[in-house]
Length: 196
Image (cartoon, rainbow, N blue to C red):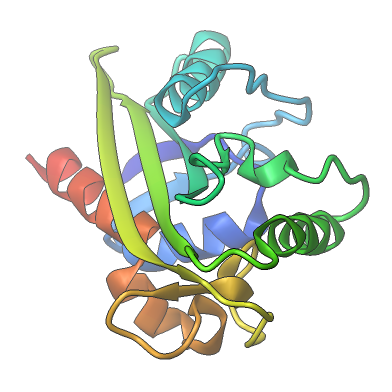
C-alpha cells in the first residue's frame, strides 16, 4: 500500500482529502509521523506556500508528501483575503473560532458592496519518491452571501455559494461538496497523477 504524508494539522482538511483519494493510499498526517511544530507559511502566493510546506516536511522526513494551500479571492477586495485566508482576521483560538472571525471580517469588508463575486482556489504541491516536485490546481467561482448559512464544512463554507447552486458549501452534505469543490478538483488531478 502506497503511503503519503499530508503536511497538515487541519483535521477538517484531512477528513475531506481521505474521502477524495483512492482507498488503497495510506494517508498519514503530521501527528502520525511525530511532527508537532509549526510549518512556515510566509510566501506571497498559494503556490509558494504549498511548496514551502511540502519542502519543509520532505527535508525533515524524506517521505513522499503533499501539502495544499487554499485561498478565497474576492473581486471587490482585489483578491483578498487570498493567500491570507486562514489568518485574515488575525484571531487566536481554535480553528472554529478563527474561521468565524475570518468570516465576520470578510462580511464586514464586503458590506454595502454589490460585487460579491469570489473564487475559491486550491493548490497542491507534491514531492514524489523520486524527489520531483509537482503542482496541481483547482478553482471554483461563486459569490459571497450576506449572511452565513449551513453547518457543514469549515472555514468560509457558510458564506460561499458556488456558481450554479442556490446553497452554500456549508449547506451541502460533504459527499456533494467533495464532487464539486475547488479542493476536490485539485485532488482529482493529484490522484490521477499519482496513479500514473
